[in-house]
Image (cartoon, rainbow, N blue to C red):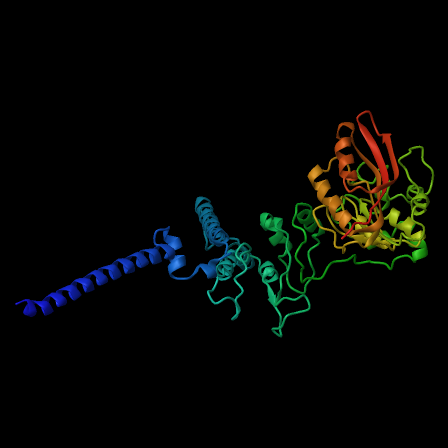
Length: 468
């Protein structure tokens, strides 16, 4: 019997071990499945499950769904406003008992009403919906590039075309080492969507609107740099050729060479400091050549007024190119030009045509704001001069960013000329720290009272060489 039982026992043991093995395998598979479900996101939110399980996260990575929702909401608001307007018009017609068969509205007026009040709003809403773009999993045009997330923020097609990255036509890496060009736009442009769309709303190839004041408003409020435009800039209809260089430096330009539509004045004579309604407050008297000729070349009673010849004598023959950072009509650059020094003058048209004035004098205006990084390479300028704009109203953190940018473009051995900076006495120590933190060598340093509560500071400082 033992012999007959032996095969059965062996078979039972084999079956037992097989069951144990299969049970362990089931447990292992179950644990692995649970781990797979967890990694796939089944224990997360519903949208996370979809992204992990259906592999759409790559397509929507960086895509601004809120902007898409805002675009759809904007179109719906347009439709609601159009419906309300049409209903209100019908109610007014009913209220006034207008007989449509005997109405005095001409066919031309009726056509104009339909075009302006009905067709255009409907067309605009239709186009806005058609322009909404969703990201595609396979990228754009067989590339791996994801959809530009800002594309659905704007409605005007020119902005959308501008911010869309432009691929190289030949498909190779370009001279910048990239496969496409990304056009820059300031981050604050998104916050000024209405103004930017007005700025970019034009007919391609036609004349731009006379809207430089709108563009400057965008720049001053942080939408800087502005996008490029494909319209033709306007100029004066009676533009005259500038005066010769030997005359233009110290002569008021021809009034006909400026577009005066956005200024209170309509000619240069009106910009005289004697006119209380001239439209600007900074740079008092800077459009009066007799007063401008005296700056930086004649002695003054104030110790903070340095002369150009004394500053250039600090580095004889070494000052060749420079930057004048301030508000003015280019007089500092004009005086430097007489010394064979080329100076670029920053300018904004704050109530007067400062940029036009500088250019018509034969000098170079640089149209930038305090918000923008200066478009110069590192260690290139021999001189930076500042006056009239960077004063005690500037936030200390902003001053810090500006000074570091100046330090970046000023070459070793270059001069920083702080000219008639003024602030409250109680703030002087804070600003002096800003000036002295770079450990520049002091060549000139002078303080002078401006009023009971304010002081002037002028200094000429030399950037030291720095070990690499």
